[in-house]
Image 1 (cartoon, rainbow, N blue to C red):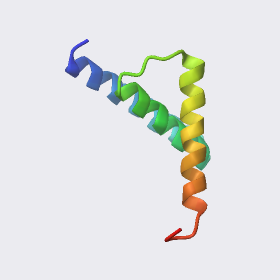
Image 2 (image 1 turned 30 degrees about the horizontal axis):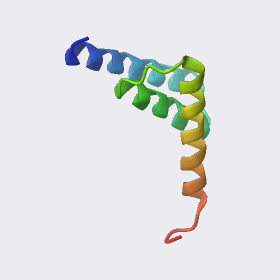
Image 3 (image 1 turned 90 degrees about the vertical axis):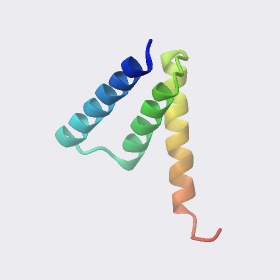
Length: 73
């Protein structure tokens, strides 16, 4: 796959996410997990789909936990 083809695939994924977001309000967790999934795909990660989804949700949960901490902690 060329770099161009990879970028086009990422654009399509982001477009689908934006469409989903407009059609149905996503929770912060769902938004973060979707963006993490796009990031994994952009890096070329082609792990088993279930494992990739689990990692995306785990990343979303970790980000939310960090955001809940008081500043400077």
